[in-house]
Length: 111
Ligand code: FES
Image (cartoon, rainbow, N blue to C red):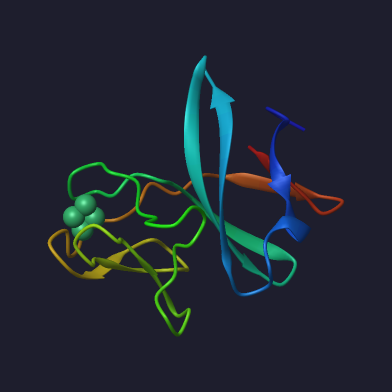
């Protein structure tokens, strides 16, 4: 496997919910959004395309109340879970930075 930087295990995120994790890449510590969907997950950099702040008001809580979208707590932008595309808010039509991952034996690795 390329990279092999472990981000987290799937079990650390409840199915259908989100978590926040840190990993060091290229000598820099980055913050990541993880949204779990069963045995798979969507991962994005925790940086809003609006002004670059982290999205979570409470650590690891990235979803709107019905857990259908990723919510930026700063100004309320909503992003699709599946591709990070912003459907409403001040950065509408921009996207979160998607992070390529590999999942092996229930562990999420940065690809
Ligand atoms: S910083 Fe995310 S909507 Fe403004």
